[in-house]
Image (cartoon, rainbow, N blue to C red; front, side, top):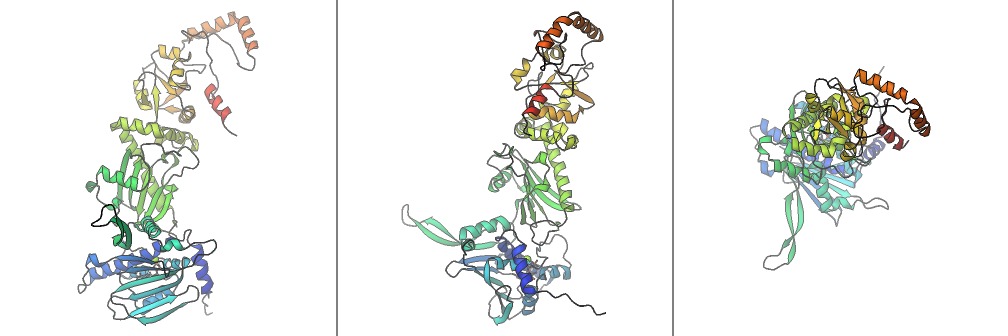
Length: 559
Ligand code: ADP
Ligand code: MG
């Protein structure tokens, strides 16, 4: 049987596509600039493979011109241009990508920066324009053509004249409607910021005529408006530069330019991986806790770039919650993007990158702990709580990653110590890692429960954060040593004969203790003789899994 082709109502299809692919209208400019960059890349490639051509790097650029009076926005490039056939095929056929075909024909695989692949980006122009006019002259051709379309209605092609090879795309920007404004796409300032946001690292200069106030010559204090052609994009991203050429100041400047924070980063990590998946990343560990860090408003995530083009502002999947303070970006050419280029098609590559990044952050923090202790203390002050939450959450599944990074205040050292440091100092007869819970160090120091442990010369960790005890309960042990609250019933210190003694004494005073228990009904479970006290007459102790402090916190939690 003869197979029939599907027919499509192309008018409706185009409308549907234009209005449903992208979440933000402003990306139309990203798409047109990406196409222009691809066109220059293709020309560059042709020059490399054809000796009769030459490429003067300086004469290749993309120019954006806005004309408010007649609502025209023009994107001009000095790329390879399009023949009449190419205009028909590439702009007249939806989902046909001349760029993908070019990559395939020329067997360009790795490392090449051509961005196009889906054959739909161009139509994004219709999100903001009523009419799109493309004038193009292809490399090696004497003729130029003008392609014009009002969107869904179809298009016209006619010969025209153009001096130089390349393409000029003019958008007639839509009039404002009652609820939508399109004026911003004609405003110098807005255009600049859209270019900066999405296309800052396009490898060719994106130029614009920029109006600036400058001191007027021959006058004092008088200013005049001067129009100058300026390159808006930075072109070479810092993460593609060689680490050896960059200083700490460069990284700090980038951190501030990117508005990752107002502080100075405590540490930066520059990663270039060339393995099964290739990516570059710059990560920062901030110095100060962002003001909203411990609130619901805080959004974790890294910026995600594909080939220098911004895909996602905050890709949350790149960092685990316990490292949510990490700022920075990842750029990879190996991501398979979905058609809007705002999301990924497969998260396999992303998962791999996230795994690598996680490892890297951990090892950086460990190195900081080992070699730059003061810095680590600083870091821990800002984000230690997040690490402890990390140990506690997900049923303790992250404890292996995090336990060596934890610190608590030590009764002996009078400063923050790691669990490893604690355990390595433990005398042979000490069975447990002791901790005491309280509001502040001063309050804990006054706890009667600490007396016996302190008298034995054992170190006590002070838990002043709500999360502390919950976190170590998740850990259960560290280097096979169990944690023990100084207020637990059995401290593992009292000698056997001691135990018998206390039992005997308790029995002897049964009457008194029963009376006390009666007085304290509902407040205590038992009243007993204790040998752990030195200067205090009485203390509270717990028997079960949940300590008094934990109970308090649990009771205070919202349901
Ligand atoms: P994609 O970029 O994914 O291929 P587009 O819809 O953005 O899809 O563009 C379709 C095709 O039109 C491109 O593949 C390219 O062949 C051609 N094209 C678009 N803009 C230009 C341009 N400025 N110069 C040369 N060719 C272009
Ligand atoms: Mg494109």
